[in-house]
Structures are given as C-alpha cells and as structure tokens.
Image (cartoon, rainbow, N blue to C red; front, side):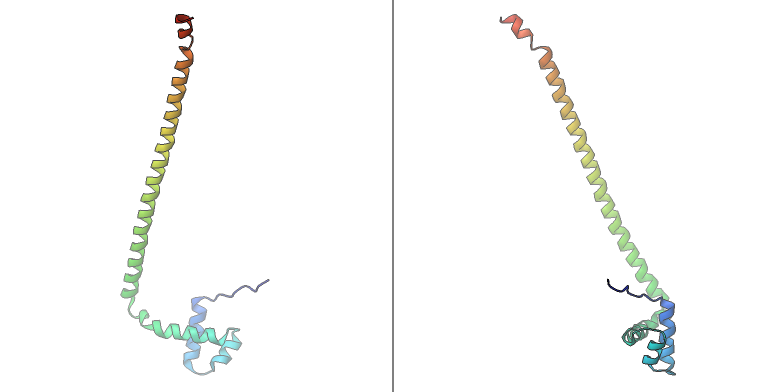
Length: 123
C-alpha cells in the first residue's frame, strides 16, 4: 500500500519561503523542522521568486483569469450546443422510428382487414 502524498497550503508554503529568505536558518534546518523535503522548499522558493511581481501587478493576473474564464465559457457553450443538437437529432430519430412503426402497423391492419375480400371475389 502506497503512502498518501502530502499537500501543503499556500499560506504554509509562503511562511516557509519567507523564513528561508530571512536567511537566519539553513534550508535543511527549516525543512527538517517542518518535516518537508529540502527540494520541495527550494522549488517553492524558486516559484515564489518568479511570481513575486504578481503581488504588485494584480491587473495582469485578473486579465489572465478573465481571459481563461471567457475561453472556458466559449468551450462550454459550444459543447452545450453540440449536445443540444445531438439530443434533438436523437429525439427526431426516435420519433420517426415510432411513426414508421405506426405506419407499418396500420398497413398490416388494413391488409388483414381486407384480406378476406379476394377470397369472396375469386373462389
């Protein structure tokens, strides 16, 4: 049985990265104290440093999220449209199948109903 992978909150990661950036303790000390792998801590630090400008430029982040949301809405709309078309087509085909069955039934009844007439005319 495999061990369950730990996940850490963004706040926890940020606190540890800030502690690393203070420089009072070594990365290995902080990692062992908080039971985190040093490689993870280094990765979080790198990610933090690459994205720290986003804290001051929120408009860029908001614009990116809005663009992503708009793309997802368009995708959802096209999928919903295709699903609707498929449902309508399915219902039409089911309806036409019912109509065909009904027509065959009616013609069968007519042929049974009048099948005795030729026997009277031509004995």
